[in-house]
Length: 115
Picture 1 (cartoon, rainbow, N blue to C red):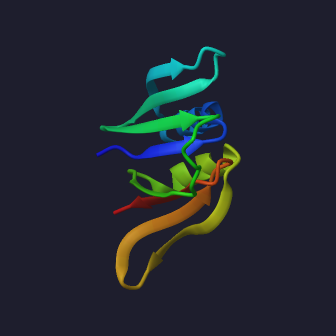
Picture 2: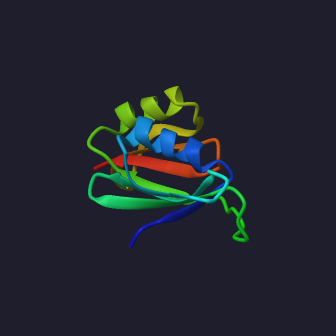
Picture 3: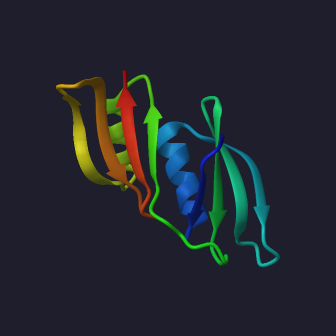
């Protein structure tokens, strides 16, 4: 299963994923005007699909949960890349995971966690 994000600015999302999660662009398809139609970015062993710009699909505000080796380090990279803090990394009493949340410029909320 691969998440598919519809973004007003797909190029901005690709840059964010590259900077924060070390994502690597695998495939990109442009419209005739050169704007992004579809892209696939690899994060570790997963593919994130990104659709951009003018499309009949409505952009929604998804939430994506990502496990990483160091949640604080990735959280800090996300903030440095321009994300807004939703929740500082913390551990809840009933959950051993360290988890924080950020929202990127397209409105996607990323829950960044380490077990």
